[in-house]
Image (cartoon, rainbow over all chains, first blue to last red; front, side, top):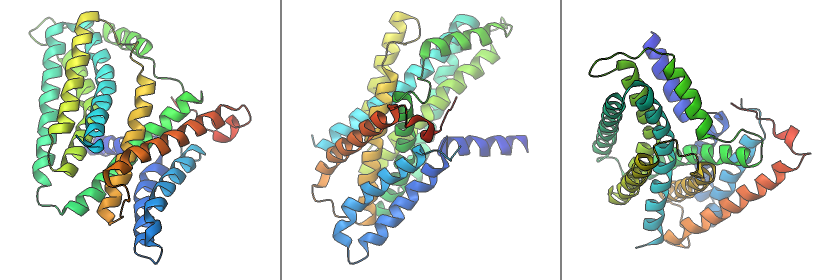
Length: 66
Length: 251
């Protein structure tokens, strides 16, 4: 059990690290860009994706994800 | 050589360099306290284990659809890159202590000196510390090399950057024989974070079907935009009034 917990903790630290917002925000950024790309605003997808990425970074810096 | 290719070599070289500097600190501390043979065997074993990880990952993804792979790679790079960028912004703005290799070395040395040395061919405590240090620091680099290589369908460029870094940092460490505190680690990590986020955005976007107007040329443009945003955030967070709102005091 100790080893399973340790293994799980290792991957949690490796992927999530200090900020859970970033671990969730990265997939959310792509899902949002995908939705924009499949909508009538598809030409905006190449702008939307970097903007969402920057937004994710801003949210993670505002704290709250200790 | 395209923009993308140059940036792949640069990103993997820089990422590997900073992780190598951190691993070198641990290996030096083990070598000085528990013997160089132990430190060397631990390092080589860890490097072999990392090679197996990259090889196994590389073989396991050969049948995955390239667009799915790009999305997966994009997500991984975004997560790692944004983590590096976030830490770098907090460090540059003074809200998080800067990474100090000299003090980490002193702490490692003190901890290792308190553990008795076993006079055998290999001192297992020293071996484990050395192996863990190199393996854990190297794992992130292994993922970067893997993701860059997997996305391009060939590992040559990302491996070149990583091997160059291993050679350069090992050579410097062998000559100076002390922790590489003068390497501007915080600045390099900032740059690597920006590059990883730029690559992650570009490749993930390609996987989703986003049409990048500038094709490969989008990557340096994204890097510049992210760099400017990061610089602006550092300036903003440096202001006394901004500090309390930003929270985050980490170890």
